[in-house]
Image (tube, rainbow, N blue to C red; front, side, top):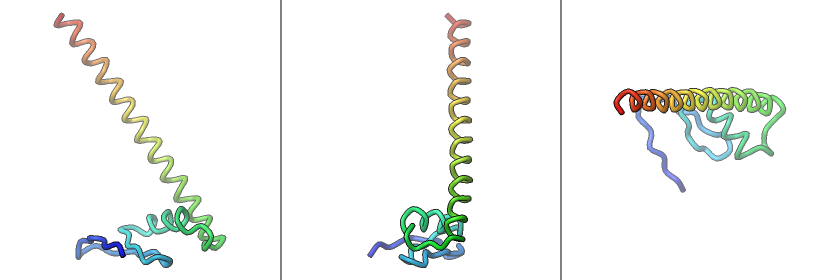
Length: 85
């Protein structure tokens, strides 16, 4: 059995299928859709799809910001090098 360390003041949301604890209810929805897809009702599948789209959009936004930051740093260092050299 796997043990999970949780802070005492956190609200714990557990998976109804495997009893795994999560910090947010959205994480339980994503977990159930990925690890227990055969046990989901139609309503649960819709919630999973919405949570998955939201999570994917957030990750895409983060990747774009990270690439923009790296490109900005690259050109900043390039211009600094051109001025110094």
